[in-house]
Amino acid sequence: MTDRPVTEPDVSADHPLSATWVWAGPHRPPVPRALVEQMTSGWGAEAPATTTYPAAAACAARRRRIAERLNGHTLVVPTGPLKVRANDTDYRFRPGTDFFYLTGCDEPDAVVVLAPGAADVHATLFIPERRDQRSHEFFTDSRYGELWVGPRRGVREAAAYYDIETAPLEDLPKHLSGLQGTTVATVRGLDPTIDALVAPSESDATLVAALSELRLVKDAFERAQLSASIAATVAGFADVVRALPAAQRHGERVVEGVFNLRARVAGHDVGYDTIAAAGAHASVLHWTRNDGPVRAGDLLLLDAGVEGDHLYTADVTRTLPVSGTFSPAQRRIYEIVLAAQEAGIAAVRPGVPFAAAHDAATAVLVDGLVDLGLVPDAATALRRDVQSYRRYTLHGTSHMLGLDVHDCANARQELYRGDLGEGYVLTVEPGLYFQAHDLTVPEEYRGIGVRIEDDIWVGADGPVNLSAALPRTVEDVESWMHELGGDGSAGALLSD
Ligand SMILES: [Mn+2]
Image 1 (cartoon, protein in one colour):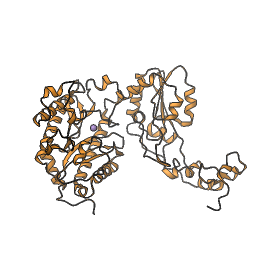
Image 2: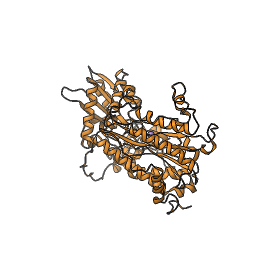
Image 3: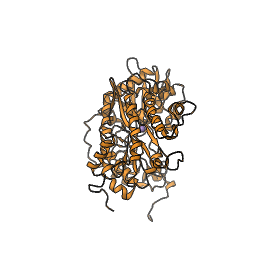
Image 4: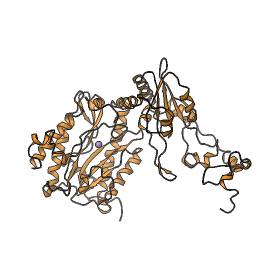
């Protein structure tokens, strides 16, 4: 740029040139004030929004419950800022889970403050002002300016949409310093500004645990959201089966890409990085590199979940024969894992310990390992000071599921691992994993990894498998794959 009028440091707010120029930030040329005036005028009025957030009433009820649990405290729950991916590009924003649970709000940097009141909790959503045409940031700020990133909900719009009192984020420090006579508790580690603003308190840990514990029981809105995410996930698995001919030419990235396409079309995103593990990669528990080949004759372990528009995620695993038919050795391992999963699911009901599903599934897995000659006898293998089966089972069987794929992780151990309650949602996902280079395993089983995972609602009368629409038995999987053309009998997705 040859006609640049002045160098950047010469144009500060109190410089005489500021009558002519506007400072737009480091490494940016100053902007003529005349352009600012031109760019911030002449825009038509926006149509007022008429919709409200569908779970606004549920969020208000959650705010009341958490305020009751920490009676007399002021609670400060941030969502967190945008996260830099590299230089001036950010990751797609995903709200902080606890904040989102209490507000439904998906604007970055926002903070909800719950102050104890005489009759009811007094909630205020502190939210950034819009960077709309009222200021030059509208077109000079590529991170927040609405000309760059599109319109957002500011102080006024958020109040109407989320049905909550709002205030400008910049007022938050003054608001917090004015609080007297209450202990302030916050969720740390999400927003460095809030961490610095709120002095650490012993109540912080109480708040974080209480938020996780509230989320253990899912309400009707949450169950509907989980069901929608699971339905989209089932569709995504079918997409992958249809794409298996292409995956055999282009590898695991086809599997990931096709599933993630469904996640973006049907929901917000994937709830976690898709595990698309073909062949021996199936025994790498968190195989998310997904850059290997997909070969006929191998198994494909797909562990994936759609995160819906209200951020509830599915978490489902199927292990599929790439060619459409299990080999006898693959089938033998698969049938053990399936029987273990059936036993695990059957053990789920209100009032039993969280570990009941794991214990039931593990007993079946260990019997299978005995039959395969991999552990000497069940009693020895299961001894607390031995646990030799774990070389082949590798992980626990269940975790809570909801807004986070590993939901409610900050609940106190005695509650998370205590008795299941009606309305909990958890996974049941046993597996057997035989590493390709494991010399303790007969050669025909080396490189086989099988996991089967479903999402289970703890109903009053027992387990409800929310992901039952996805085939699980050997026969059902094979006929489903054939119908979808995953065995190559139908057209292909990607051309060469
Ligand atoms: Mn899982």
